[in-house]
Length: 297
Image (cartoon, rainbow, N blue to C red; front, side, top):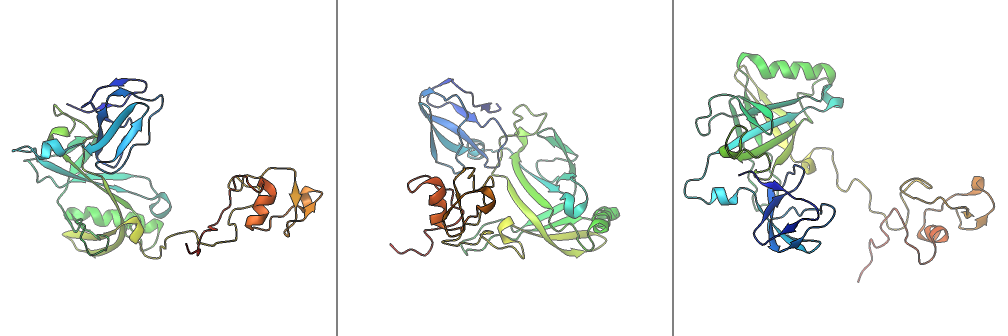
């Protein structure tokens, strides 16, 4: 049976299982550990198996949406789905291409999941496994290029960004069970493994038969650094009197924190002391930097 969505101000008993009201990538549903009544608004659900959450007087624990099915003596077949999301800036489109390998459970044609059609297309996906070496996976996706279908896609996107070859397109890998596909008795778009997201880092090879892409995590793309913000201890990075800074007061100060008489003379010194002048010595300070950086305990 499909999982029932969580509901507000509702009594739950131990063992009840509910899903979030909107689709999430975690592949988790939530089992009631302590009976009670849910809150008036949906909680922020955890994203790790085994995590607990107090929802008014109900206590939930996160469990896998498909564990019970996989632990059966004869589990249902695992279906692997792929989505390729164009980036409008890079590729001139927001199209989404959907396909499946078509080799599981005698699936011979197109299939439908979550009301979306996935075209059967020979594909080989490798390298998605995480290891203990500390490096993020860099999977390889090799797709059939019969009749030059993929080559034609590359030609189109390269007209928008020269030599792009789909670099920057987001690839989603979705794994579910055959019983949860649309049209099956237990159809449920919420019952999945955790959905994995990668980005095309480069086209590895292209021939008349296949095209191969190397994928990378969002945190493993070339020319990207984390954190995007520089960790600075004592210089505020927010724009003064913006939504980030949030100061709208009529007390005016110059860059040296001296009181002045008009808005035209008002200028923030970008220091913690400047923030305190405006919000109070003991007030909550929206200081856009990291005053604790470099401190030793």
